[in-house]
Amino acid sequence: MILQEMQKAIGAYREVLRLVRRLPKDSRPYYAKYARENFVNYREIDSNDPNALQELLQRTYNHSLWVLKKYSVDQSAADRLRNICSD
Image (cartoon, rainbow, N blue to C red; front, side):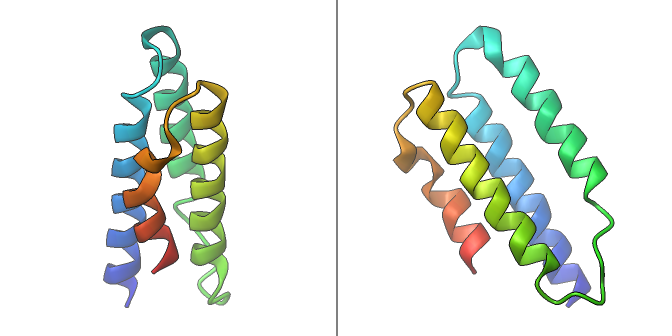
């Protein structure tokens, strides 16, 4: 179970980085660094809370949509991320 959750989190991180590539060139370094910092900061989640990872993934998806909207990027670009975060 833990390995599956770790793979899900890594998959979400990978998709976020793919989405960063759709942003304007000058904003990419900021959001790539932001994603990395958050991934590192939240790698230790409460194992006693069965909803902790799902809540974190949902926040990841929602924030990604916000950033895409901010830069007028088609939000359907986040469909793969949505699939990872909603499973």
